[in-house]
Amino acid sequence: MAKSISKKIIATHPQSKREMKIDAAIYKPFEAAIIQSLKGSKARLPDRQAKTFTELTDAVAKIIKKKIPDFKKSIPWYTISILRDLESRGVAETFFEKGIKLNRLKK
Image (tube, rainbow, N blue to C red):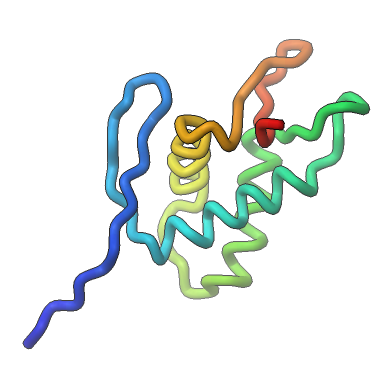
């Protein structure tokens, strides 16, 4: 029997530079969901769109449950892992505002 080979994407943490391999079939929908969630986020300040991790995870969970209904793994773990990879690629950023840690797309 031939083994099916799934394509992997290497996700990198921005601070530690630790790399992990994530199936492309999981990475791509999560990446799209994170970007979609951060684009549609309400601004805390008029010129900024941002979400807390909890807000982001809740929004991503709704999208993933529609795209991959049988997904049984940890949505928060994949969300943070792929969000950190997007940070290392310069797509997203994490910042503090009034003591609250927020995530947004880089401009």
